Length: 228
Image 1 (cartoon, rainbow, N blue to C red):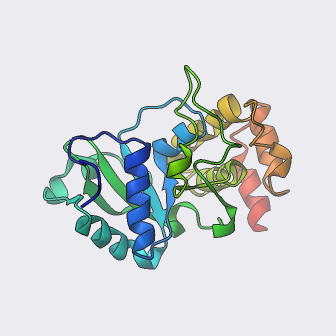
Image 2: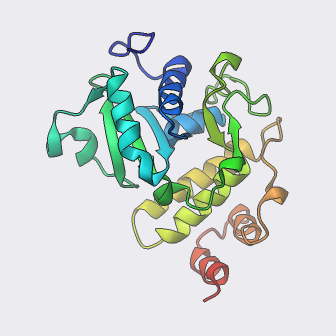
Image 3: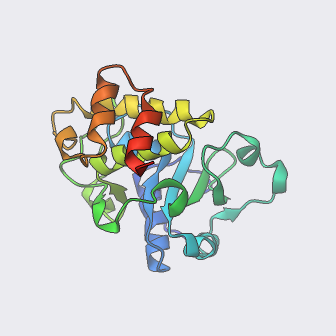
């Protein structure tokens, strides 16, 4: 069992670190994802659970290791409210922390297919913002440094790819909103962890267009990106 009472907890740094440590100990590389990741980047947002991205072939290992650690598998079947809610990415697995919060597991090929494992940084990295009133919770405490997150520049690139992939679906508005958070909270952050000049050359035209208010030039960008 985890060393903290999971049924009574809402997500916090220690609980997220416990989940990440459980996955890592089971041989499952894992990347923090979803709204909790946004709070690490300094974005103020509501957190309704914890999400991780894992290698495609290790989703079952991830799920079973968390169940063995004491997190509850879902017993609601297809009627689970967390499944009936609109999902922007297909869930590989989910477990319940309690009646209000879930752990969501996503396949890397669905969310971060271009991301290299070398592009990760610790959620405790001092380059990430600290907690600021009116912003997200910021970087984790040093003792929770096991949690890995995408470098913010690589996260931005991943969002651009997701937006381009899903440009004909209602998910596109969500990915555009995530990109707008980068503009509003990360591109102006005093830690300078996000530098638009570090974006890959193929991503910079789109990001500069987004900053100039021409974000829906996505299809043109995508055509140029894939060379069709």
